[in-house]
Image 1 (cartoon, rainbow, N blue to C red):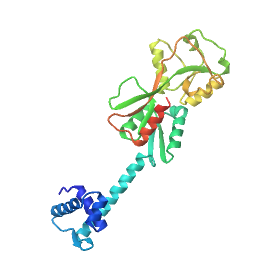
Image 2: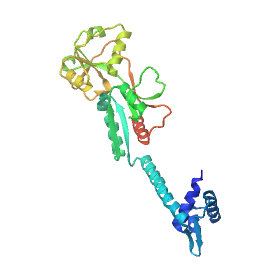
Image 3: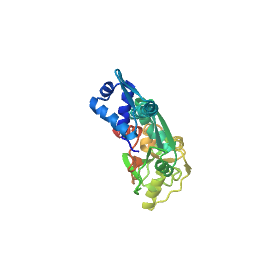
Image 4: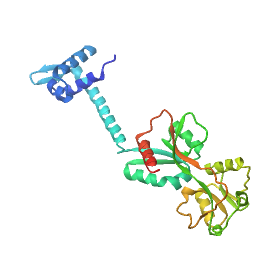
Length: 293
């Protein structure tokens, strides 16, 4: 039996108001339309739902049983609608963001802060992992959005949108403030500090070396961009760091070392699943990212 939901809605309001005329007013439709809807529903079900009285209508025994079920169903519909509106207005909810630890620590904080200030009731979950693992999380729905370097190769089911460019530069502490190198080859003979593979910065640098037939044997390799920064500040050597992540330290505790070859820029962006509408929370976070770049 496939009965139009609108007929149940009419039945529910008339039963609540105990009056066809009051039910019609609540539904904002004509009284004859309500009467016809009740008759149609009774015909579909094969039994009487109301008994007319001088003061209005009352439910039959069978109508009372039906009403108890419809009442519960209407409560679910109302609660579901209210929940949807609450989520839409970002009065509650959750956003699941994936990024590397470096991006979370060095880039995302201002945007997370603005989002939290605007929508304090939204829970923010951040997953830090390798980019390849985060893309898997995006596919299975564990995260809503991934903030990541945009890869050169196309991934069929993932859509990337650029936010900004990132620039990897060589820097050193005060020991290297006045030091100059005629070429990158000469610079690479120094104590070079790098992030470990498979960091995006390291991948980009390895490709750059290969394209330019250069070699680099780093003096030290570490996982953390933050630790690499500290090592450079303390004169352990020359580090390859992302300029945008250390801008507050440049010309203070760190100094950019110029060379005759520039490392190609990287594109930082966000990734979402193709053919998938982002959640309300993810959409608002994307707006914040875009409006500030």
